[in-house]
Image (tube, rainbow, N blue to C red; front, side, top):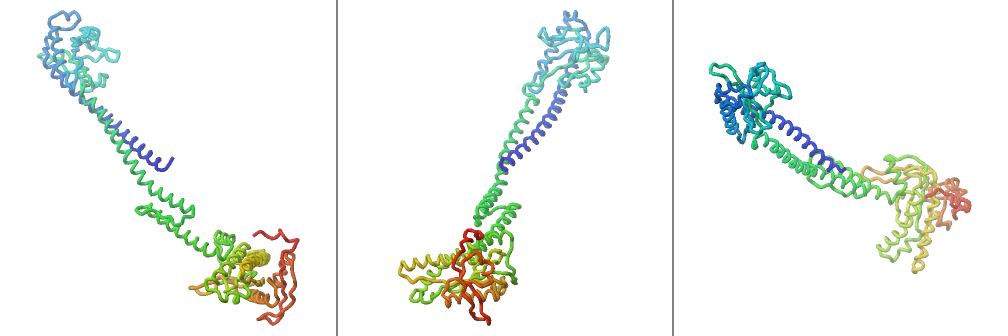
Length: 492
């Protein structure tokens, strides 16, 4: 179930339960008050009727045999007249009768005259007055005393009694009235009115709950859409304006998160041209970055330079020169990154590559030489293409050396460059220069050679002097992979 639906159901349920309880309590209280009002009206009618009756007539009717006397008929006609006069819209007298003490036992109450016309329902003179299947044994004095609190003998709110006294003030009988709610009594109206109010409140609650759930869930919907878009790498997703309160704060946090992800993505794309994808993912995942002041570590450095590019570029427009270099370096960079190398810098028509930084690489020598071999293969493909087009082919010399160097961000606070410096870097550059004099494509120092000797085919170049060193350097020319090492190199 969606949050909007849950909120809607919760608000409606809360309103229905709350208003239902209030409606029940209100109806209960109104019912009690209206019952009291009906009882008061019946008491007033009974008191008025009791005064109108002739006490002598009442006293003469005591037994069923008295029903044949004229006094009985006259008294019964008066009671019926009073009954009919009090069948109003607000009060409906169903029956009016007199009660007298039984001759045998004054505590037992008997009927005197009953206004009822239906033979099967009429109570005759001398019939015992009963409530709930038992004779009323409190006498007419007891009934008169309890007239204000009829529930004490379960006469109910729809019954009322008034005393009938003779001229001396002696209690000789009680006048009883049984009423029912009139057709237009408030008792009949209060229920529908409360029900109508309850229904109206629930209807308003439905509208309010719908509006509230929409107002609350719309910001959540936009927040969810923004988060889903960010999850799909749409880092430019923005939230709609107009959010307030906690939603505005949450929206600001999501915007800040998206901005941070955009910044990280920018950094990732910026470095993707210099670091291999695998190394870049590791750096971002582990939070490892090169230290600002640099660190000493073992690296393998590769220098590559296009031979005779100055002569090739003569007569070319600058745009053509850039196009040729871009075509060459596109192929070279792809090879370097595929073999876990880091592009340090481009040097005009050459490039410097570091293996083993910014993260350690236990196979840095293998990766460096493999990259060099693949670079020469890619360059041969490009050279064949240029030859077929009638253009001068290109050649490249590569020098590789392994050793300890200082690696890190070198420069100032305003301008820094991630690079490696040290004698190991200088020797790799000198070896690349020596490829021209020795007429070879790839030269590897003795330090690199010792680490990967079984994996490749070698040709010794002997010892030779390089600039900046007083002692000769021993190096080797790489001719390809050894037969036993093919397919056994660490995967790139």
